[in-house]
Image (tube, rainbow, N blue to C red):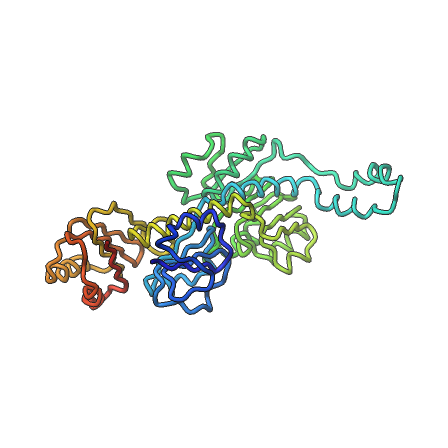
Length: 390
């Protein structure tokens, strides 16, 4: 029986995938094998010794202590692309909000309550104060062509925009999904100098914190409109404030507002609604559950943010999973220990990611004595051993 702890409300359509006879699921459970969460902040949480996996039903994992998890042999999963359509649709809405003064005009229209029969004439007189511009024919610069960026680029192109994109790390998969009518730009300065609109679709890392800053604003046209539906820390707030005051930035639309931005004119703050759709929550939950189940039952790793991807068809009834530091002579030492126990390797997969290596080993026995764990963990560099058997 596997125990699953949920730290947030997880869509029931996803949780229903777990076989009820083999899984216990609760928000308050002792010794969980896996945790599934959304935005719950785990940094101050004590990680149970029983914990093997954490799945974030979403893309961002800044609420999870990744280094601590890795050191404890806990595989952390996310669900890239599962909420991409929901975010894409809100980015397209952001384009309209940045162009047509919709928010301001709605607030003004509400102020006419109490004017009775005069409302229609007041509306006609006041609408000139909210004139905007159309997006057709304008240039949209898409920074980051991952799952969301590609969908945004293709949708904007279908709406008649001139779309240019920049991503030095684009995957083959996403490159194939990108419309041929989207122009690839190799340099960020050339990209920003052409843009009427800029959408940022990159992850927040120590390297990308404050990515849009004074230097980048200087590369842009005056009256540019910027959309950020990725992460708040990507924009330098002080530099943004100066750019709005100078007229460099006409509008800033964000799904991750902070208090300073809430005070700024020219900023439309949306309360993190990018993935807040029934469809996105369901898709994220289904992907998270499938990944956790495959790892707990088979040891396969797909969409982990701290372990290498590793997937192998189960050949026998017993499987040994080992995580170790990526240093020489580890496979040889593992093989020696197994041979000394009379365990023959039937099939093996060894994958590495940065400083971590992960091994899936199928052996020619129906069951393996649990005592082998301590012998393998005695090898310097090995920090996680699991045994899966019938």
